[in-house]
Image 1 (tube, rainbow, N blue to C red):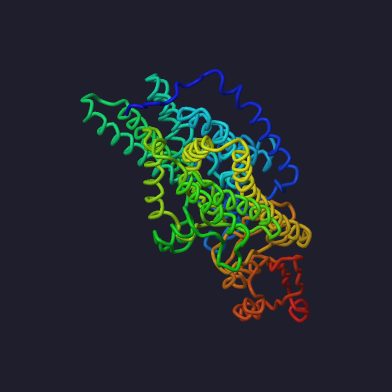
Image 2 (tube, helix red, strand yellow):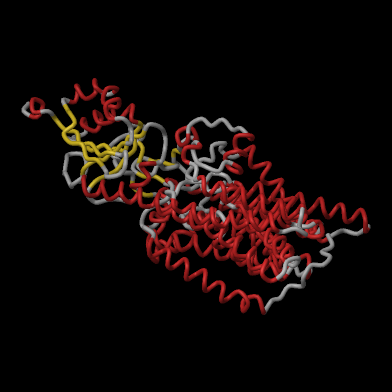
Length: 585
């Protein structure tokens, strides 16, 4: 592949150019850390990652189960572990590299340190995206950096202890290493390509899809170029480096996971998430396009108007750039609506496009000369093919709590350079006053949507903080014959991750998880081992749950002694114990 019009890499000046911008973004992150409940989680999966990081800090992959006195089939630990073995469990080992990375930050500052690890990965992804843009057009370096760091769904991912931002950083570094190799032919960059591809595979399962499509795209482009020039293109070498790095990493990870789980009993996928019917069309709608979470009643209408207006402005500019009045008016409407969206409560936005509207706008205004650049063509072909394949393999409902298609977040730093450069080049057709208007409007929309994502993060963290605090305040130490503390059963209506809110070991009580339909059967088994009272945390209808378990309650001679409501939430904590007649026996 011949990189015509590509910029020669600057190995000395880029850090000087980006330093003030890095400092500004870092200051924003520090300010947000002050107002964020960093000791609590946003989505349930964070609980299992943090539990594993804590176990590694304590000494190894295996950690104690909550109630080793009971057989494994009777209950599930609060974190819903992946492996169990007698009195031990492994919370998470599917991609062991990630908890190893988290454990470094966790060792320094607990959950906050783990979160900082994710934020640092976001900064790396933003810098790599900016550097990638500089090889296409130097004017896109700073805009691409800000777009990834503050104006994309990666801001949401970076604000949680999940592997999305580290995977995005790996993908961006891999793309940057590829371009640098194609420009300089230095073999050291091949190592960077292979390591980045391997890291992406070992951090997220979808990294294997990206590596495969990137390798195929590079090899295909090499074949096309070789057919024209009758010589082997360097893109073939780069493609093989991607493929080899991904393959070696996948094999090493398989060995690693097996070595961790030796002699352990793994929970099946059905135990963890239930039977999943995958539908590519539904997956594309929910994770790429749907502008709300759940149903339309939760939609932020101002935010939707901002997205539609911004896309309309981009389209109006594309078809009538000589008459910018319509585009300018729509851009003002988009910016105003984006600001007004914050009068509504923060809520999730599932789709990538509505949570990253600048992506659609940037691609709409991108001119043919930009799209024909080999680097841009390869980036877009790789991202498009990856997105198509992912729609066939991801959970069609998006899985856990997501903002802007979480499975596609690692593509953001690859697309941001094209979006930023497309916008920057369009600005050249405007006068100074119009440029200020356009830049301001786009910045307001991008930052407002990013800020809405962070507000949603803080909302969910606050919810989980309330649940944890209520449990810690309402479940006092109550020594029994079974444990050194009380037992809190988290009863859910389905196999969700609510119990992972209580992922931390608590000296006063042990938290375990149960389906609401089997809660009282579990209490009978606990009572047989010496438990004389128990607490139940549940979001389900209490009367229905007790009606279904009335026979078990009668056999226990127990009743509900107390109902503790958590202010502003549908979750309640129930205390069960013997009736007066049963207690007098």
